[in-house]
Amino acid sequence: VGWVIGDVSGKGLPASLLMTSLVGALRAQTSAMCGNLSQTLGALNQFLFSATESNRFATLFVGMYGKEDRILEYINAGHNPPLIFRSGSNERAVMRLDEGGPVLGVLPGAHYNSVRLQLEPADLVVLYTDGVVEAVNERGEEFGEDRLVAVARSSLAFSPQDFCDKTVAEMRRFRGAEEQRDDVTLLAVKIQPS
Figure 1 (tube, rainbow, N blue to C red):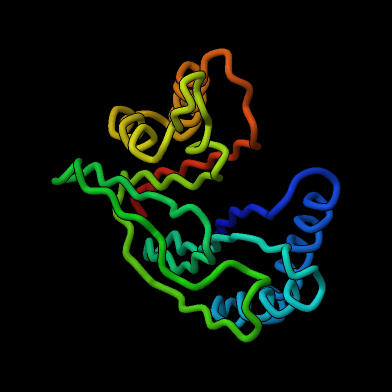
Figure 2: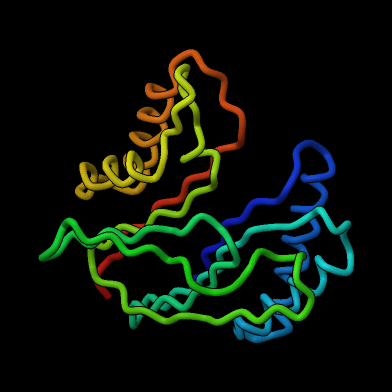
């Protein structure tokens, strides 16, 4: 199962077109590279570098999850690091999935390293865009990763949908009357026993 989340620089139609191009290129590269994440991200980087202006870039997290062995292979190309919350013996443990390489489209020939890790039953994996943690309240304070972590720790028994609903509600409560300035994408995955 593939898990992908990303963001592009800019706003409006140019950013939308860049994301559409990135999604198409990712689909094409994934098929062509037969699951080799390092080659796939390297090719995507070259594509964006040659096809866009120098001030345009994308962040991307790509993970391939094997349900049978619960192995996650991932690359984080400059995206907000997804978080893994262990609900087993150490409920305080939080893993940040931040390894991989630079943002896409800035450095020609950049190298991307994939990481493999074992997930455990009942782990909660949270993928998000910066619109979640950069939501600002009327005092100019950001919601931040610490608040996201606190919501997750209080919601480990929740279903992924309930976790997302609670997180968005907490973010809106924190923001108050302040307008949301960026898009919000949040994906939660609860690992099931094989």
